[in-house]
Image (spheres, rainbow, N blue to C red):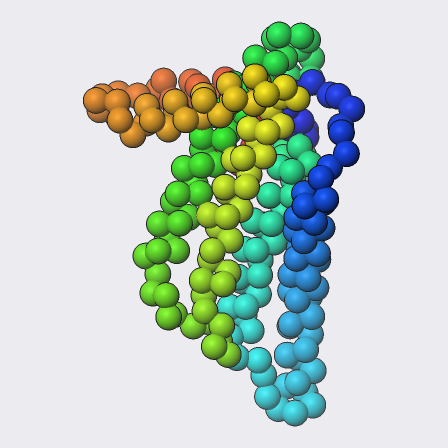
Length: 212
């Protein structure tokens, strides 16, 4: 099922800069998909015609696949179409639906934010001068990991509600969960079952499937 948190409402016109960002995301994804399809074909033709190949072709395709996943996730979050395992939230009404949306969104946003930080740590741990091929640094591709998960986290918070109160509640819940995970003076092993219970509840209430 599509995870579409929060009550539906008519959407106001988007600002021009937001439309530009959305258009840029869509165009970049289309270009990456085209490159994934064309690159192996061009290499086959070059090998048959000229006896040469494309250096790092398979690595390029692997990293383009990464970009497709990250960009696709960010766009799905933008449209409120992240896949979920449960459709229970669609059966709830009024405050129950709003509360379920805030809770499931807060958990999903917290996990996305942690993945964003983990992505940045991974990028930072890699040598800045590491080259994929033709002078193209690996970081050109890897930087999309933290950017993508950061965009997902923000968009989950934004779409958790059509009201600022709901959005801020989702953001505060996500921040509280991250703080608790980092700063509580309790052995993390003792929190495993509590965390699993919270994750299960969030999944039942409509959190995206990737957090499970």
